[in-house]
Image (cartoon, rainbow, N blue to C red):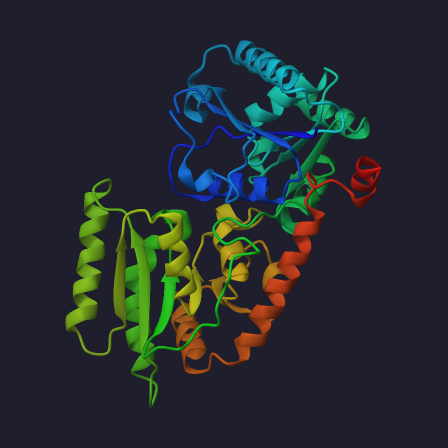
Length: 394
């Protein structure tokens, strides 16, 4: 009987990529038993993290500290050893063997230290995915040496989701990091994606939580730039910006968003703005995403030059074109002509209007990108090889 342990302490919210990735990993895995190891204060696994086939043998262990608690701890070494021992006990009780795997989909520096300690025992192979380059920067050289050693021994496999991260890790730290761990977040390969039917207005999605590094604060400037660029066109297309926002937590930001919405409603020549208030359920987010004509990602490069974006993955899986900041990672996913790069507000506005005026060239490109993305899922490092499956069947 095969066993997989998924170690993910970042399961604070119902929505977001973290729970969605648990569901994706379980969907791609052929393990008979799946154990999810998460933080000790969580009362139950978010619904969006549950596998669609609701495996009978899914077990959840609420034993880890939260990421914020890890940062505040006075004795990091003690916590590292303690969590490694806890994981070793779960491994033992689960019956996991060397042919099985432990998967850490969003590994922090602390997670790496814990897994290095765990790797000193004889147990399953450990697969860690890093999504930010600073994770390795925060490790000591001694721990980096341990990663290299356990990679040679076949005990640790280090992954990422972008070629840009893969190259940066190898050039800056001389550590092998494989771009083989790209997971769908909200749209799985088996999910049906119908061909978008153009409505009266071209729908552009700026989705996800409002954060500076995601360009959310540029919304007011985008509205003005689109209005300015539209006045230069003989027959400008109608555009609707579909924006997800989070009221209550950021009152001033909510007021600014409401002001932008009011402008768009009363001023002539401005694009329409449609507000999605708060987090969306998995089903609602899926429906919103598939109801768009393109995805807008004005992300800042100080965060996304090497790190990937779950929204790019979702957009590709939904066969949607992407308008993104020039220089963002995941260039390979958008190398099929399935998007436009931009930097300034005017460039983003022109890209939106150009795509809205002539969306047809992107249809074949988005389908090609989707097929290529699905092919990459066969490379996921926790999926057993065909040779192993043949041996198991025999």
